[in-house]
Amino acid sequence: MANGKSKTAPTSTVLIGGHFAPKVRRALFLVQAQPETAGKSLKQLLAEAINDLCSKYAKRRPNAVVETRVLLEPKACEICGKLFVRVIGEIGEKLCSGCEERLIVEKRNHERTLKVAKRERPDSRAFPSAHT
Image (cartoon, rainbow, N blue to C red; front, side, top):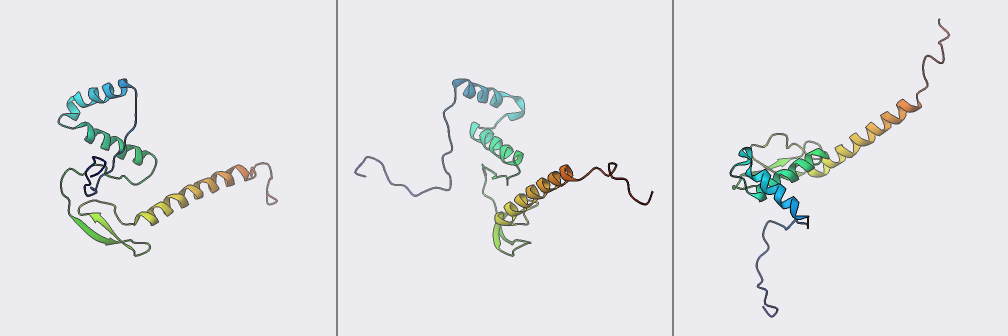
């Protein structure tokens, strides 16, 4: 403790923050004051916003805040067989994060390929078939 800072064991959380205009904090307090968010802390509301942001961009929801202790169980990925840990009772946890990310990338690439193919496909009306 030579520099005045005590050494503590690392926790299972990390700081995620940023500097915003004061009106952003006021807006968060107004959201917190709404009847439908009664009893939620700012930390819980920010966690909800992070989860929604991840869902919007097709990423796995990180479940940013888990207020209570949860039971975990090992589960085998349905694609590669790799074991991963999931929360007991959560629906849809069938793939490890690596396979889930690969599927998302493959889906995006497939959609791009379809768009290109549709643009490059000749119009069938421009070339009448010989059988008519």
